[in-house]
Every structure is written in structure tokens, then in C-alpha cells.
Image (cartoon, rainbow, N blue to C red; front, side, top):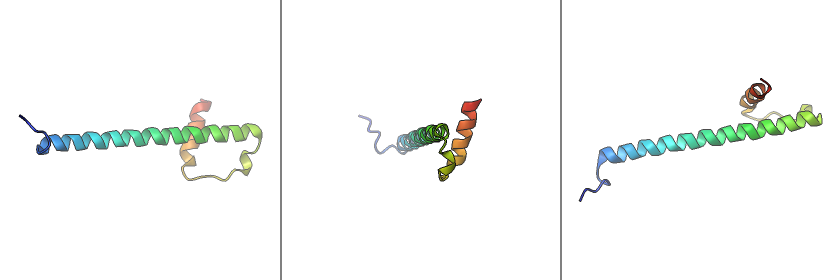
Length: 71
């Protein structure tokens, strides 16, 4: 019976697939973080308190998201 565990080619393919899945998960989490921050900033703008908000690392991507939403 064939055992894929000691097969270096199979293990390399599995490792590549796992790394790609981890990258996709990280990208999804980052997109969710950006969307949540954009929602937060949009709500603050509507409340008129956006000017009192300290910028955070990564807010450049959030600005891009808000610009995209505005069309």
C-alpha cells in the first residue's frame, strides 16, 4: 500500500497548498479589518467626531476603501 507521508514530492505539494491557504486566510482577515475600520471611520464622520480620531497604522488602506466606496 502506498504511504504519502514519506513521499517528498507529496509533502512539498501539501506544504505549498497549506502556505497558499494561510496567505488567503491572512488576506481575508486583512480585508475584514480594513472594512471594519472603514465602517468605524464612516460612522465617526457621520457623527462629526472624525477629526478627533487618531490615525492608526494601516489607515492608508482604509482611506483607499472609503474612496472606493464613494465611487
